[in-house]
Image (cartoon, rainbow, N blue to C red; front, side, top):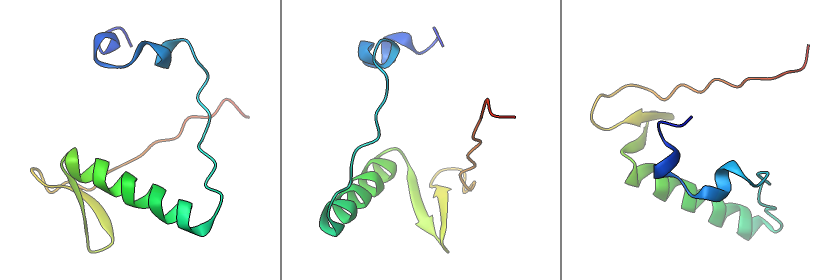
Length: 69
């Protein structure tokens, strides 16, 4: 965690994250467009319905951790 501390806003370590409320269908679409823009800016694009790194061609993999039994 401390290896990236200087690269992220300080509130990441002090404030609880709250998911944005999408609200209307238009807001949901706008949120998805913004997410796609940010991913593209970070070097990811959608190919054949998969999110792929533009440099390595690797598909994105996500792991969710849960404390529930």
